[in-house]
Image 1 (cartoon, rainbow, N blue to C red):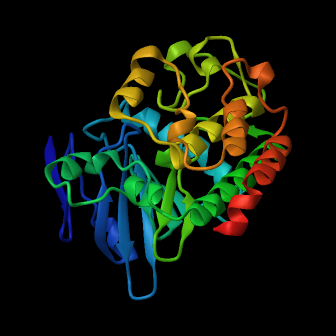
Image 2 (tube, helix red, strand yellow):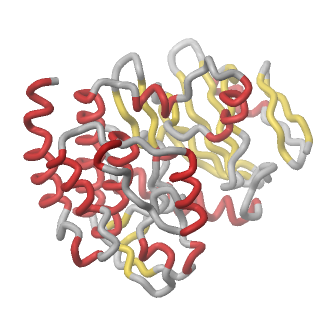
Length: 306
C-alpha cells in the first residue's frame, strides 16, 4: 500500500501515480479509494462547479480485477449512462484515455451513498455518527415513498430500453438529505438483454439483496430478477432487520423478508413487496407496470395521511 496525494487529499493505492493532471478541474476535495472495481473516485471543484472523476486502471488496494480489466469494464459501461439517461441518473461530462488510465468525468451530484462501506469503521468507532443508511431509514414515510417511485421509474426505463439491471443495490444510490433527492450513481454492470447467469454463485451483486436465480449458473436474469431486486430494496427501506438476520443472508445465499411485525407500512403493502421477492420467479409480478400499480394502490392511504 502506497499513500498518494492530490492537494490536501490522501488515498491508498498499490502504486504511486501522478494525478496533478486532474487539476484542470480545480482542487481535489473528496476521494473514495476502497473499491473492488480498480477505479478511484475523486471529487474536484473549481470556481464554477464540482466534478466526480472516476479513473480506471489505478490498481486500488482492494481491486478484484487487474488494472487492464478495470479499464475495459469502465469503457464498456460508458454507453450505459447515455442509453439509460434518466433525470435521477448521474450525467457524463466527458470521458477519455489518459496514459494507461481511462477517465470518466461526471457532473457532480450532491448526496451520500446509502451503502458507504468505506466509512463503516468510522461508525463503529463513534456511534454518535449516523450512517446515510440510518438517516435514510429514519426519514418520513412520504419521503421514502417518493424515493421508491424514482427507482420504479428508473428500472421501468431500463426495461423499456432492453437492458437488465445487474449489481444494482443500495451502494448504487445516493440521497441528498437537504434537497430530498435520490440519485442513481453506478450502473457499470448493467447488460443488454437477454442475460444469462454465466458465473453461478459468483454472479454480480450483494447477498443481502440477490434473487435466487442470481446464484444459479445458466439462469435467466431479466425483468423478474429486477422486480426481486427492487422488492428487496423496498424491504430495506421500510422493514426492520437484526444483524443476525442480515448475516444469515450471506450464510444461506438467500434474501428473506422481514416479518410483518417489523414492517413499517400497512399489511397490504407488505403483501405487495413479498410477492416481488417470491423465491419462485413465476409467482412474482409479470412486469414493473403491474408491480408499480399494486404498490401505488397499497400505499395510497399511507401517502394521503403522511
